[in-house]
Length: 304
Image 1 (cartoon, rainbow, N blue to C red):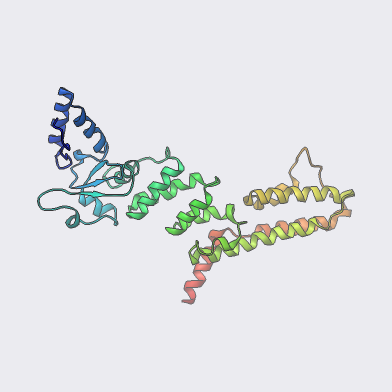
Image 2 (cartoon, rainbow, N blue to C red; image 1 turned 135 degrees about the vertical axis):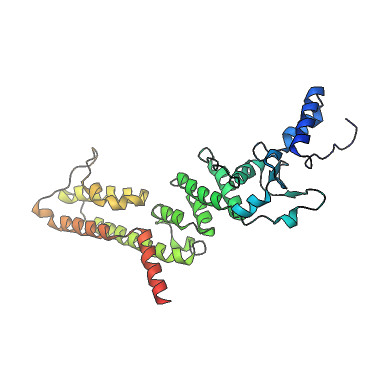
């Protein structure tokens, strides 16, 4: 209660801190109450017995045991670099308290935190922190939860994250959704062992799409051709909008739609039916990117 900078409290142990907090509440010492509620993490505080103290960029303190840092992560400094013989110095970190409170819970001998309530930005901040400090279980869980945001406007952000940190399963999940994107956009992003299979997958996709485009241009605007032309346009639009639908080529060609009439199945349209069957066979032979990658790597290692 003096007109000066208040004392630092982060060196106090839990019992001392609780005693001070109780006294502050009893006598309603405003600044002390404010300091206590502002400074300490609610889940990784002094009661955890931490011998290393970290401070978030928004000035919250986390007490973490060095043995847990060494067991569950690689990116934090060792004890001799963080603890002096006389007192505990705080180690400043650039992440916010919200992110660090989740991150440090992955380094406690307890069940990891649930991440399904995080929005995309919160999850990405945690994911980047887990990669920066190499927190094993957080890296794994963030990559798994990131799949919940696939098929949204965040796909290219997820791709960059997955490529930078070698989360191949996440890259393979994204491939069908980004297969129509020009390859030159990925040349400096994807690791070589993913870029080669991705290129093959990309080539297969456009080979089928070109087959569809080529037959479309031969149809006339009248008679049987009119129905076939409209149906092929419908299929092409569906695949361009969602490349995953290429595997549903046969279903799309026969799908009932109130705005489309059925195509002619008589002998006068044998050429069109032959084309449809040929494309259907090619679609069945297209491999998913995981299979392509597996074969590519097997061949690569066999030659080395």
